[in-house]
Length: 137
Image (cartoon, rainbow, N blue to C red; front, side, top):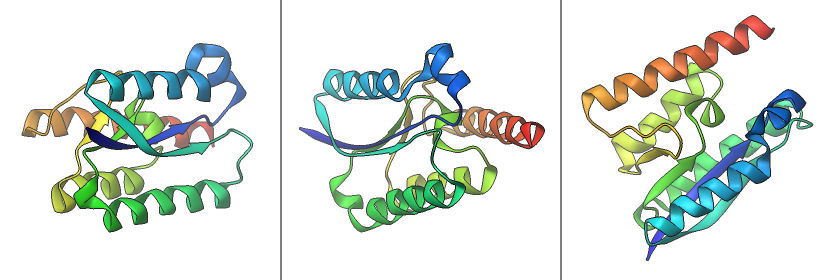
């Protein structure tokens, strides 16, 4: 059985209304894990009410856990790339887990692979997420 680590994140009430609630994301992440003969061994949640400090703390916990348990993890699950990281610095940290620790980055609704083209697509999506965050102030 495969073991996944997952992150569900909502940064605004508008996202909940648009169908990206934590529950919707978690259901999609769990369904993905089950379809791929696995389960989520660790789930991180970041709600729109989280302070920036709390959000950073949760993200750091995910990164630390993944590095410490890399041999046991078959993938990091996210609903969408912009749910994984809202700035390029965080995205690069996640990509580093893939390249240095061999933990696949898996977006359940925006599938890509670890080929040069797949990484380019994810980087483009991460750049758009970062741009949107900067525009919203």
